[in-house]
Length: 461
Image 1 (cartoon, rainbow, N blue to C red):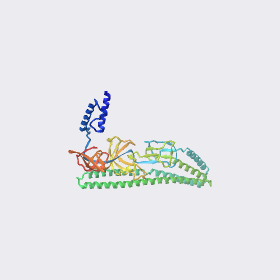
Image 2 (cartoon, rainbow, N blue to C red):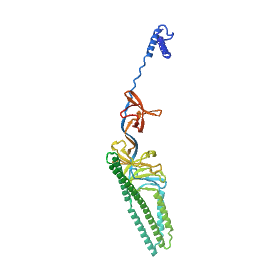
Image 3 (cartoon, rainbow, N blue to C red):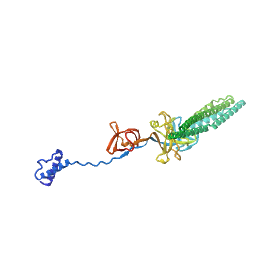
Image 4 (tube, one colour):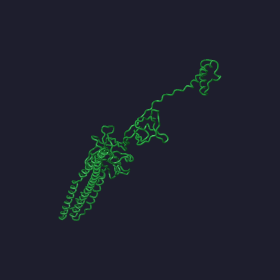
């Protein structure tokens, strides 16, 4: 028998021994191959009686039960933008002809920001002015009494214009601004009082009067904020009333102009003023349409957003431009209503420029939307960040729940099986499984209410 055949028979016999668990080869393994088969069988017997060594299990990481603080922190981002903003829109639909501003531009009250394609209206206005001038030229002022009436009407018109200018000069905007500053000051005092109160509570070793006094200061600060808010709202209402007064003064001018025209008609000795009235009515209607098709800056401010471009079709009352006062600024975030409702007004945390931890400062939630129906769906956070450009991305961390001086472990060592929560302790007698009760859980730490002691060593899964 050659070597090749001998090797094949040896492998066949070895396979038969493994599969059948026998200790002797069959008679098919004959002649010179019997010796090889016997040795193979004896080797198999020895192998089955000796335990196969197992691979050494790699040491699993361990963690020490520590005592410290577990915080559930809600982190979100917002933009550093002016606090006081206004959304601007056209009262009618149209096609945008020009946009004169872009984001970051400073504008003054009355600046034309954008308008519609109103070439037809402008041509109609020119024609209406010519018609008015022609109609007025047809009226004779020869009658003496008519001249006196005309003079009186002109004086009335001049007085109406003076009244309008006087009303415009007495704008109560400074009162609104002053009330706003008082409100800001009151809110700052409230924040200081809150910090003082919490500081007093954090030192129970002090006399109780310290905390009581701090609490009284907090109540006083809250009352001052409420009073400042009332003053601010009152000033804003006065400003609204002022706007009505301006409109009334403008209407008085219109009335004086009509009276003047009527006086001119009477002085004309019976010449009809219907043509003049018709021309003036056309002018008023066209000017109203032009005003509705033009967007002017209502305040001295800075442009925050521009949503339109020349050629765009704009819908009535859709926001096209956002304008705001340059100062003060705050963090403005657009959160889902469910996330916003995790916060509360007055909650304090830390704000920093994104990826720049050295800029971190304390901050406080100023306002949140109460429901999805609120007109303002933004979350506002007040902070004292300095030298930060507009629209800079700001990271906000707000602690929602804090547990201090508690035992904690990383979440990775907590095990669960069939509604059982446990850990494996590394003890002198070997690994030991113990059930644990969990408290506050975060991505980095889990509060351990019971089951382990401080400095226990836990084996990771």
